[in-house]
Amino acid sequence: MSPRGLADWLAILESLHPKGQAGIELGLDRVRRVSQALDQRPFCPVITVGGTNGKGSTCALLERILLCAGYRVGVYTSPHLLSYNERVRIDGVPADDAAFCAAFTRVEAARRGVPLTYFEFGTLAAWEMFAAARPDAIILEVGLGGRLDATNIYDADCAVVTSIELDHTDYLGPTRDHIGREKAGIGRPGRPLICGDADPPTGFIEACRTASAEFRCLGRDFGYLRQENQWQFWNLTGRRLGGLAHPALRGECQLSNAACAIAALDALHERLPVTAQDIRRGLAEVELAGRCQVLPGRPQIVLDVAHNPQAAAELARNLGNMGYARTTWAVFGMMADKDIAGVVEAMRHRVDRWLPCDLPAPRAASAAQLAGIIEKVGADGTAPNFVSPETALRHAQENAEADDRILIFGSFLTVAGVMRSLNRSGG
Image (tube, rainbow, N blue to C red; front, side):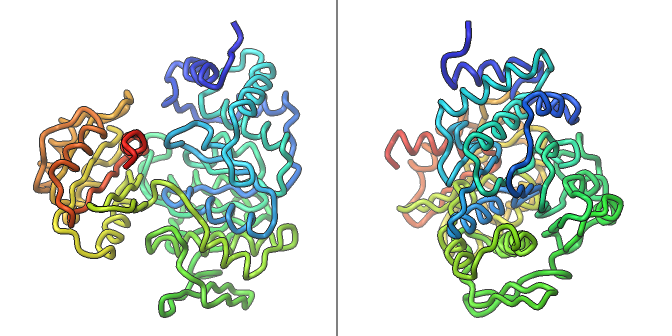
């Protein structure tokens, strides 16, 4: 029986590969063969965004600035929080079920038995939707690494690598050098590669040189200067764009993400010109759920998908700048293959009450495992284990005072579970 709706298609995608949705099988041969069968070709500027942290924020900043400039924009990101439709946005709006189903149908017809992972199938379908909508620019968020990620079958007119830290070491290698080489793989000869890591590893620099990419690095070729309640972008061509408001996304790291976005648009200015006013509006209007997102009301609720030590350290800094909270309760769930101890260590002085929870995924660490790691690291205040983010949130809400803070972090699934709970309750 042929699929009838998006839910049917997603069930098929999850069954295509023996590892299911979490299955990772790096390599471009299979996905490139199907792309060629679909006759997928570039038709507008493509910006590919990789990096350990900051990818989603940088994609959102690029998207909003280009939309403010009047361009039609297609964006492909992953993972999603509440709905698979979030993965493809056209003109700032998630694609509808019909567009996904039509694209999945075309990919299925073209693959002729070629095995594809969940992510590969979705990547090909995203391009099919872009080809149908014909936007003026396409922004692709790299799923994992870069060189062998499915998004890398599409040649980037400008590549961005936001940061290079230890993550996914089972697939990308044990050191920053290894990981940097993989991330540099999204660069193309003679085309700009924007690096938001001010101290990139030697492996990354060497890979950029080998690929003949036009390497531009934060702090050397472009950057930002803090001003009183504002900031200034600069680059080596003499461009100075001052009096900029802080991006609407919270966190000091958003200045480097915004600088990367502006540097990328500078590199493409002949094909996608934007004005200073477009940039100012884009910085002010950008939105992205689950990135240091503060919900209205008391006690304060903060949502963040930080799931590695670098992101957790940034979250800790952001919490320190948010003002007083008597007690911080942390609804905490993570995947077992992540550096859980490193994340707890980064957050141990910002969290007073840990609420470890199970997550609905085979790769997830159990609440009991999380509690053991929290105790081993020496963080205080571990509460009983919880079977879901929703039950952990309920415990926090029942026990927190008005001047407390409830933090939800550690995984997209942790944040998603709480968001669904709050949506159902109207919170």
